[in-house]
Amino acid sequence: MGWQDWFGTFTGVVLVTVAALPVAALAVWALARRRSPADTPPAWRMSLAEVGVVYGTVPWVWMILLPGERAGDVTGRVSLVPLRDLITIVSDGRPLTLVVQVVGNLLVFAALGYFAPQRFTVLASVPRILALAAACSILVEAAQYLLRLDRVSSVDDVLLNAAGAGLAAMASRHRWRRRTW
Image: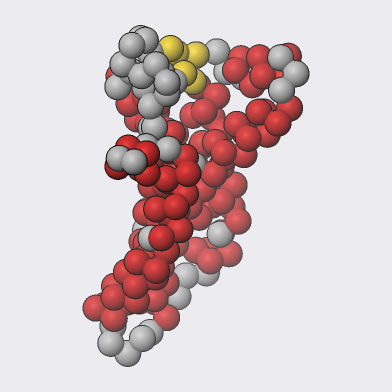
């Protein structure tokens, strides 16, 4: 069993993410202690937001950059017509696939949308989070295409990724609208 068997599969991503949770908690603690030895709430909030963005986003990006079975052998595929991929899944009669596709894509940049406005004042608006998430999603989709990962680079993924970040930003709005730090 090589390292690819652990790090190059969905199960490997999940296992590493779960195993990294104590490291993430330690990182929050260490960052907060470094900022303020008095354990003030702003230091803890800032540290949690920084680690939350990374811990909540990297595993999803890692997962969607995993190569498919024919990676490197096939040229990248692009779908630029909005909602075409989702309609195809519905017309093929695969409701579970549709749910997994939609929910998974909504979650890719959800941590970014939830935590970034809490940490960075310049991002404390839903339109800015939508723009940032869309830009990040376009980069990921371009990487899928350029690296020939046997995946479809789809505008539907960009739309859902940005929507997930926007919904998460709205869910955290009460935290960044009344900022005390």
